[in-house]
Length: 224
Image (cartoon, rainbow, N blue to C red):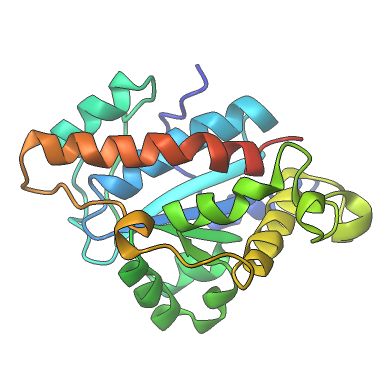
């Protein structure tokens, strides 16, 4: 199955001799039981389909996480209804190490972006709200970052070996370059609604917002 149901490895697993380090994506919301786990599991599955398992590792955390909790039942139902797995998920708290280890941080809202940057200021170079990121990478097309004059996401441009991690970092550079060329989104269009303790319709809105942006993000971050 393309859905990754196992727990994520520690950073030491990324440093095994002879094994290329994967691209590292962190998704962030507040409680880490609704929005960010939905993003984590859906994006992981899509990137596994594109690159193969292990090329990209997607993790999630919450700024006020309900540490040790499983995914919220309504969010889990919608995640699984879209074909992804929530099995084995456990909520964790966001910390500076998680942010520093990531190549890309995707947050539920712009407010979460600020909290990520406060923990690790260098993350301003690679943190975006998820729907904002989708808007920024949409013009790249199937050919990747070269479409936006940001340089090709290949080994020659990245100085690496042409891995998924190289491509991910090239897309991040391209998205950052797009920030000054496109009108900023209104907060309602940049943020994912928080459904926690809200009626089921709000959970539906959350899932719709994520699933509308997911194909754009998966195409940009996936293998060309």
